[in-house]
Structure formats: structure tokens, C-alpha cells
Image (cartoon, rainbow, N blue to C red; front, side, top):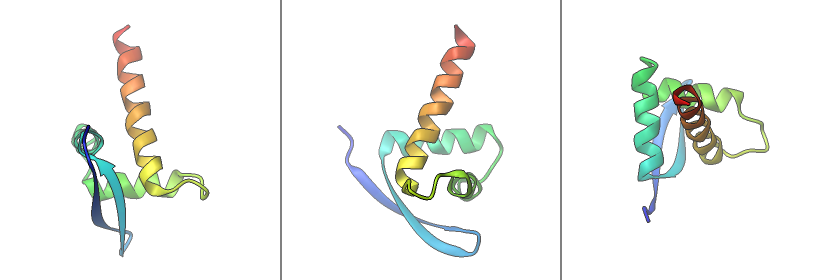
Length: 76
């Protein structure tokens, strides 16, 4: 099991942090690369669209999960 790691990032001019297990972080980086975005831009996008009652770390995990599901559905 991968330990949760806290990371800091600057989005829209302010510092924020999120905590993810390494596999989620690796997939988040891969998604950013596939979409030709910086990691900060992808995190900002997820942050801007998440429900306000959802924390950023959870929103990022759900984004990775949705990306994976769309990829798996495209292979079926």
C-alpha cells in the first residue's frame, strides 16, 4: 500500500496543497501529459469544477478514477 504524500502547488496565483497516494499522483501526472497541460493547470481545472463540499484531494482521486473508467470503456 502506498503512503499518502502531501504536495504543494500554486494554482491561480495562490499556494494550496493536496494529499495523494503515489499511484494517484503518477496517474494525475500522466493525465496532464496526455492532455498537454501542466500539472498545476490540471489541478486548477479540477479545483474550479469540484463541488465546494468536496476537498481537493478527493476531487483529484475522483478525476483519476473517471479518466481510468473512460479509458477502459474505450477499450471495450
